[in-house]
Length: 544
Image 1 (cartoon, rainbow, N blue to C red):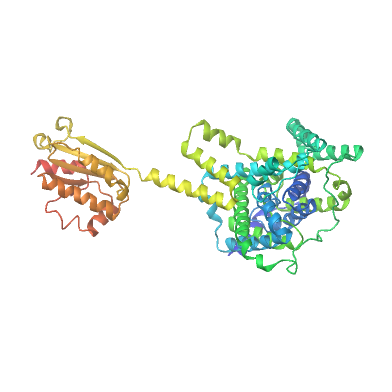
Image 2: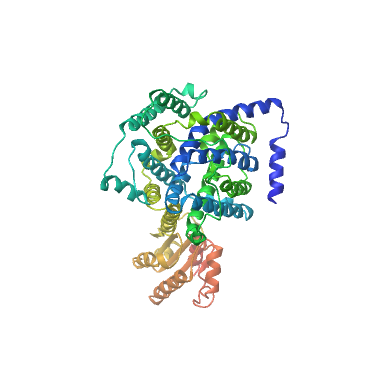
């Protein structure tokens, strides 16, 4: 039972909990909030919603998903990957469409947890995940061009938006561009030692906002931050056109799939950092409940985020109270700093997200894939990355997995057939007659014996020369089908009709079972032809 699993997690997590551990949770929560604040605002804006929506998402998910999580360390909130889906969804169906899709996705995640589907993510090949992540990073970076430059793109797809920059008249706001570029440079040169006291993203936003307040630049800003977690624009079935419900099924599946993948990958990675295993099914229930409730507050879909989660662990967070404290700090920031945050330049947030997109890429893994020239992995990476940019994220995953399966089938379906003539003088056996083994060949078969490998086997069998005794050594054949067995039977009949003797050695039990069921072992040949080892065949031939 998931409830029992959750109770066990809490009991283990809070065993021996004391004031010292609580102090660590408070300090870690404050640190995570400092990282989460600029990201929440930026992801809210870049998703097509508002900065307030991103902030509310971080607060509610930090409280609800954090408390219900399948591990002590998961920190959930709005993420860059999710914005890649939401921005086109907002353009087509408005925020009410996003809210309904989020509700549907939450239900799907809840069902995935209840039916224990958390293990599905383990079947995704690593290069596919890496390509998926890089594709999302590209989408995020491309999505910041408008806020960075002041230009306006149009179109529902990423390619259409890029094309619109060249097909429609554009005006660049150079002040916005300079602010954004300064933020990018600042974040890259920001000393790592200072990062433990104040994250680079937060420092960049503070400086950019201060400069904007002093100089009063003509740039787009975040705008008013309402001092409430119940935003004016939140889920309202009265405002939603129910005729669009069918069109939101695919986006809802995309949101749910992304939430499942991102949350469980985050949990697996962070679990290795903290040496604590994530309960995937409990986590999916938590993500489901959170995403069901978020639309009623005006929030966008949330997932676990590795950036915030890793900060929580590195800052010494002990329990899920770290997530709760981070949410409370963000809530206080909304009430206390709302007026200041309203003056944050959008180009500054764009700069933060461009750097975030760059750092999202798994550069070490990418370098390994290309450096070692792993062709299959390279194609898996490139195809998934391109599909993520061109199509929606769910299709990208399916394309990447489908390609991986095809390559896997091609690889495992390859049969190796080697023909070797027996040299009696080299046999170290006392009970064999060298003269009777002079015209003996051994056909070593490795790989599956099925319709796709019959042609290769036939080519090798046709080049046996003058050998009188033919031994098929099948230790390396663990899988066979009827087509392969029938083809082998035809080869044997052809060889026997030529006056040769055919034997089999080392036949694996599953293949032998198929031999028996097709009658090849008992009915079709009158001589003893099956032996447990090739040596036994040699002895048999010597005794004839």
